[in-house]
Length: 60
Ligand SMILES: [Zn+2]
Picture (tube, rainbow, N blue to C red):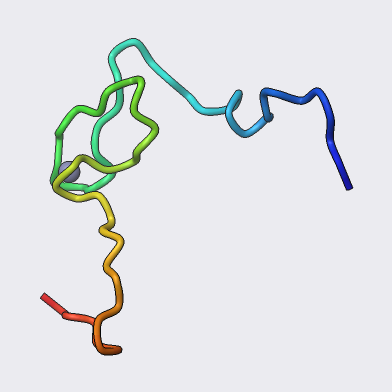
């Protein structure tokens, strides 16, 4: 199924973006996120994409 001519999805349109910007979703973290940044966490708390190495996940 193809959707043609729909450049802006409703998902993107529904993202709340305030002039004040947003803060990291980490409860204790008040790091402001850029309004142009669609991340939900700051760089410290951003879920890391950890490549699986030798089938182990390090639990820090
Ligand atoms: Zn954070």
